[in-house]
Image (tube, rainbow, N blue to C red; front, side):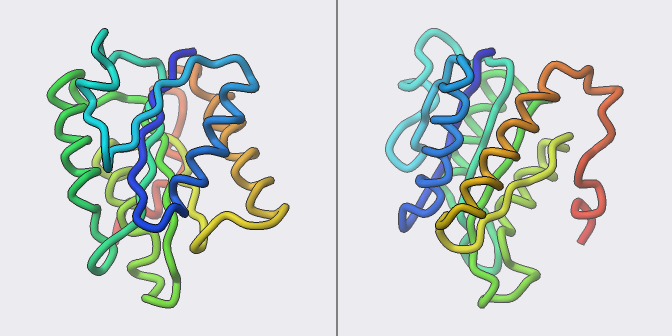
Length: 164
C-alpha cells in the first residue's frame, strides 16, 4: 500500500510518534512518503503526484487546540492536489494540563475536516515507555488493517468526538 505520512512538530514529540508509525508501516512492507510539513511542501515531497492509498496526518496543537499554520498549509495543498481523500487517519500529541477541551485539538479538527473513518491516536506530551509504544503499534496495525475495507461499510470509529 502507498501511504503518505505527514506531520508537524514543535518540540519533536509528534515527530517521534510519526517515526514510530513510519517504522511499523515500513516493517510491514508498505511504501511510505514522509513529509515534515514544517520544512517540506507536498509538491517537493511528491513530485510524481500526491495519490496514495492512505493518508496519515499528525499534528501538535496551538492556541486553545487549534491547528498549526504549517499543517493548515499542507492540508490546503493536499486538497488542491487530490481533493479530500476518504482514507485519512489522524494522530496528535498534546498536554492535558491546558485543559481536556484543548487536548489534541488539532487532531480532532483535522479528523473532523476529513470525516476520518479511523479512530484518532492521541499521545500525552511525548511517546515514552512500553505503553505508548504498544498503543502506537496497535493503532498503526488497526488503520492498516481496515484501510482496504470499503468506506461505506466502515462506521466512523470516532463519531462522538466529532461534535463539540
